[in-house]
Image 1 (cartoon, rainbow, N blue to C red):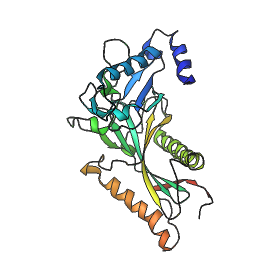
Image 2: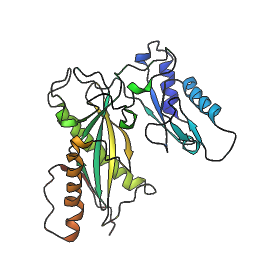
Image 3: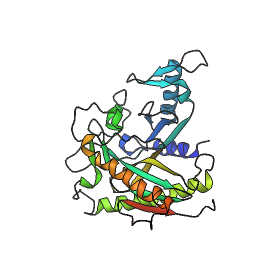
Image 4: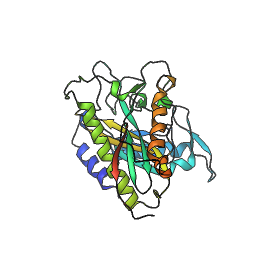
Length: 286
């Protein structure tokens, strides 16, 4: 019933070059830390993934722990629901830096409903240089494709950087590419939270006099367009390390300024600053 997948596989059938094929990323819907993620570009490839997991599953309905090829534990209950989404290729690779990266964005949702994007974003880099996904050469090495900080060995400096410190000059992009990406992220985030509030009440229920902080992940392709990867309801605030802990300090100062101070009626709402408003709708909840 996943028509987009079948249409993609049909297009791929006429392509002999792996780099020209449309790739998809499969994520167990309830796991974290990059566990159980796979790439595929055909129906057979997807079937092989499920057959691989089925072989490793014990003959019991009890919740037990299986292991992927890296030895990471995955609860079998986490392998019952999946998300399949287009894999963004080719990604933006910075001048002189062959490592793929994604952008971690902290987002504040206040009441019902105002949403703010925290401007001090992070760029999280993969552990090994990027190579285009391919069907050749046996098992696909995912370390070049996954940018989760929990998968890094810590042996390489620069795996976490401040987004705004990245070089302005990038081949094929305008000098203001970071401002353009940030505006795209704000626009997407605003639309995302309003859509969730209006159409997914079972999962997202903004209420007055409350706030939530989320971690959103975006990836930028080679042409400078940003794409939402996922939304984390329980974001990791340790990704900055000690050298950039000022990022999280500033985030919570912004949370207090936007979500706590107005609740006590302590003056007018401050100007945006690093907390940039991207959604302001009245859902009629009092």
